Amino acid sequence: MDSIIIEEKLSHIMKSLDELSDIVAKHETTISLSASRIEKLMSTVAEKELESGGAAYFQDDKPPHY
Image (cartoon, rainbow, N blue to C red; front, side):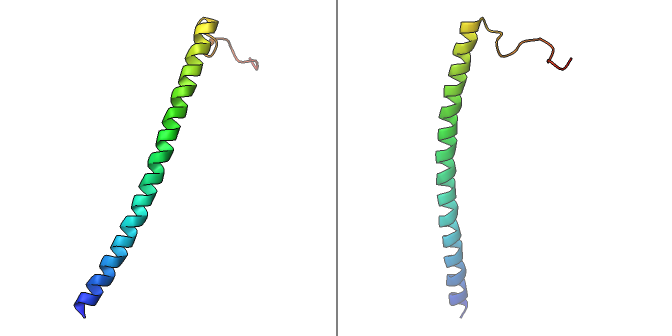
């Protein structure tokens, strides 16, 4: 009887492990995609800063409501 309980618990643990493995694989894909998109965005911002003299995105002007 104890072996049946152990096998049942082991089965649930194996199912949970498989589900977690799938989740981790999806997260890895999402993180890789996000990292590549961030690199592209950073490259685009750097190019725009070089074209505009480096101050286009970080101007020290007061906001229009002042």
